[in-house]
Image (cartoon, rainbow, N blue to C red; front, side, top):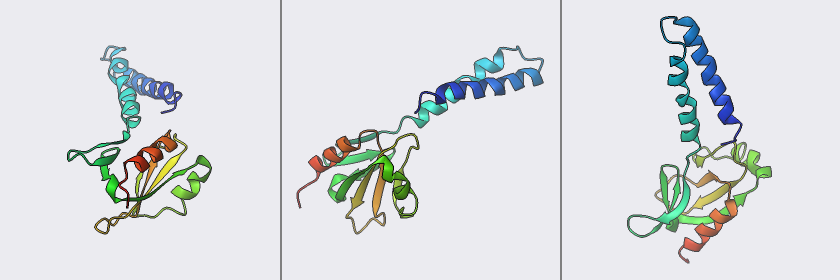
Length: 146
């Protein structure tokens, strides 16, 4: 999450709290500020907590964790890093509507994970990450040799 979103969130909460304080005069003036200040902080914290990791699953098989979704590494065909300069094309005109996307607009790079699973209609995953090379290396290290 960009650092400047935090003060903007607090400023928006302060404006809403001010409206409540002016509109409901029977409330103590500070009460709307106390009640509404945590809301944007919680929302921004929730938005910034997307887990992207390669870790063992319950059966010991390596899994790609992207948010709440899990993908066995054994069904991955290819992996590639997409630089920020190609992000617009990958998320725009080249995006397959059936692809699984974990996108955060404030993160520049993406990782393309092409699947080879006949039971899954999803052709590929696009995952935003700050460290695309590390994710690609982790996925390639855990893939079983064909």
